[in-house]
Image 1 (cartoon, rainbow, N blue to C red):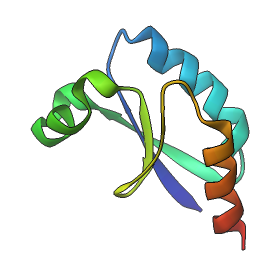
Image 2 (cartoon, one colour; image 1 turned 30 degrees about the vertical axis):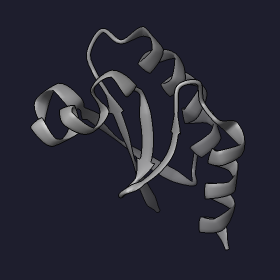
Image 3 (cartoon, rainbow, N blue to C red; image 1 turned 180 degrees about the vertical axis):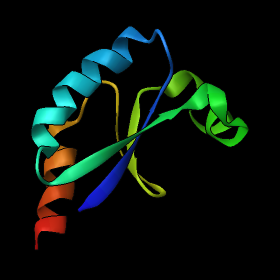
Length: 80
């Protein structure tokens, strides 16, 4: 099962909203690794004011608002 990185930070309302939208889309297809950008200097530099961001490794899939089509395309490729 593929693991998606979800770049977030504590207290981010948009992060909570997007995660709630994302979870049903990836159920049984991918797992989520929560990455608090405030805990890693590289993540903070890359994603600071852009959180939330969902990625697969270095491939950015979506930021806020959730791009349902992009997530769908990514999941269809990993299902092949």
